[in-house]
Length: 332
Picture 1 (cartoon, one colour):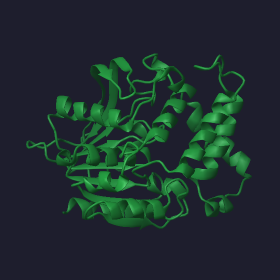
Picture 2: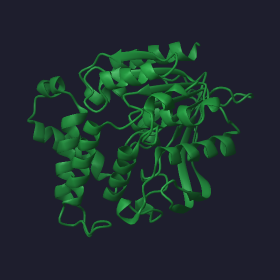
Picture 3: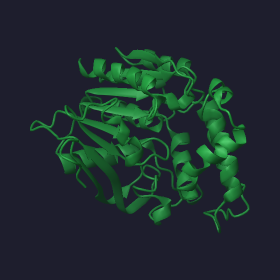
Picture 4: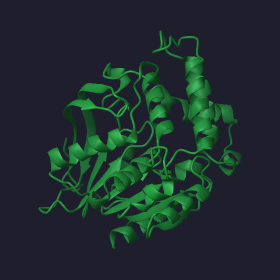
């Protein structure tokens, strides 16, 4: 697809990866990765910024970054969607099962798919920047730990290098909300899990936005969640929601080992960006990750949006804070 002449060129597509082995031991028979390119790749291939997707986000949900945060006139922005999302290979396609059948996608699998995408479609081995929010930040960390020689810079926004016990508790509550629905059959759903999704949305919203934010809204919180949050999850197959939760739960760049040693291998110029009221990935946890990475800088977005401060698609103050961090990182 193309845009008007006054806007940066765009191209959206699916890239086939063939038989794709996962770390869990399963293989996606005909794997596909969804991506969107905004801007032009230069002749040297040196201006590519990779944006891995966050939980539930598809390319159109992250395209807003091109302009307010990432300059598409200078940089070629490539948004790549993780497995399990519904746009790339996912349980909803029949390409994968769930953990109950031995299927768990690791963020290292998503990084391997992205490496193939960049090499096979763009001829790029070394992106100028891997920029990620939330689960996208997890993938940025994974790039820099697993392939320190292939990453120039990473910007990790509201995401940690290892899923914390407290964050895992949140994820387990979401999974339980869905699988406790009466339509769950052990491998999927016999009918839409309407009650499970309502419970899921209530839990998700209570963590994703901050206490000050919920004090600021006019309507009752249950009405707010019903109108503003639930539709975002109803657009997804619930099996895909579960698959992405399992990827989030499994995330650990040290694979159960020494996190200090794993992050100490990072050679990329690194910015770690926390949200002041983020309940998922607290500023303390993110500052600790930054301290483990040689030369990393730590920044804090002041915002009452909670976790969503790292994805401020409709809030200019947070956008400006992110742009300053990114511009400073790219100037190095």
